[in-house]
Image (cartoon, rainbow, N blue to C red):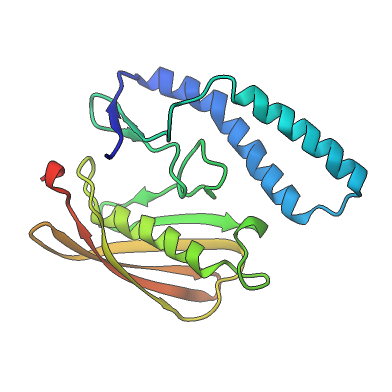
Length: 206
């Protein structure tokens, strides 16, 4: 069952929660990067592990029962803070900030570091797919009406290097409950991965 919860959160409360949790998430992102790249000795690793275990135990003293889901305010605006691509509270997320222009173009500029490596010095192909699935899906969706991935086809033109990247997407056409959208991932030298997909408006949102 999809967890879309209506919560009576005004803008001030959302901002208060953001100030609490966003710095924590960024610190854990930094920890992940440091863990991948550290070369300290065994004693320092053991000390760091003990500190991390203690912090984890502290955070587990009060937790949600299950995943974060998506919190909706009465106007239908969502907080997808647990999302693996854009989640403010998910340290696995890069995170992306997705922009939507009046022309229908959807885009995001972001950076992927050591935590997202597949081939040496390059982004894992599955991570490229995940990001394009999200961005192309955003283009296909019309807030607050979502469209979920039916099919997604990728063409890898060349390896995507770690570092600054840009993702773009747009809708090609709509046929009933199906939205056909395309997009790509690019670095400073041009496109690395192309994507095209069919996205479906779920029955409960029609």
